[in-house]
Image (cartoon, rainbow, N blue to C red; front, side):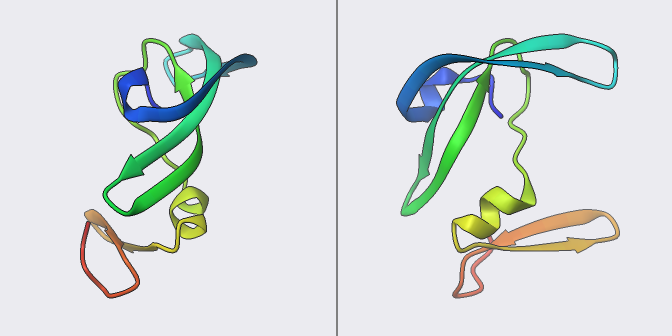
Length: 85
């Protein structure tokens, strides 16, 4: 999910429902698009108006042939060559 429409390409405006956050804030999912970052493409990223941070699932990274590694105080995303992104 992202609140920044400018990050998305191939955007489709479509109301997909709502999402509720931990502070009970409810926001509308207003569509989806693809996020292109260099040679990395993450598909079907939802646009949530007003969202202050980009939120991705581990599935989205893995579907884009990226590796996700968690440590006690950090999370690393790497490409298949082992380069940290």
